[in-house]
Length: 220
Image 1 (cartoon, rainbow, N blue to C red):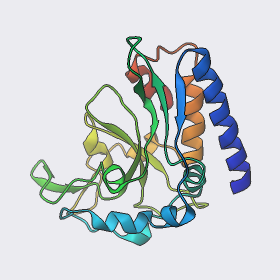
Image 2 (image 1 turned 135 degrees about the vertical axis):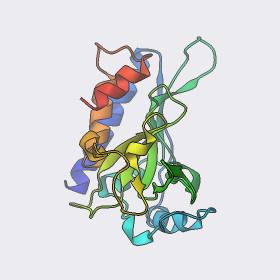
Image 3 (image 1 turned 60 degrees about the vertical axis):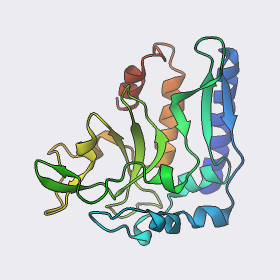
């Protein structure tokens, strides 16, 4: 992926989403960009996490993925908004890339003492960046940092409250909490994920009010 090419593709994707949103009475909100200095500071920001972690966070493990970096240099946050009752504008949660903050980036982290089957677990390897909304209290798209970046990119995982354990590891031996490795449900880059998201939301055969169907379509 060439950065310049992706930036142009991203602008085209966003313009297409803006046109689509206007045609159905929705709106696409694009917040101002981050500076390069603000993006470069994100790995250090996470070191301020206020609770003890079962496995330590390492700044060097969170290399801001190149395609995500280019997104942030264009917009710090992008979201679709609609008026489900014809009154107040609401965020359409399946399409919401958050402004990266300490709270949002660590939303999937579990502090020390969190256990499954009386064994401590860790999710420190997950860096969350967007809502997924599968009809549960919280569902997030995350970068997975327990792997070496490839081509400047980190793989993505889906983590939600119904199956949160799938995206975690046991502390004692480092094994996944579930034998079905979550990487089989992910994307290999932010670029691939965002391109897919734009295509799924604009599918004419999907009921956008059915968040589970939208989420399943992302994983097809």
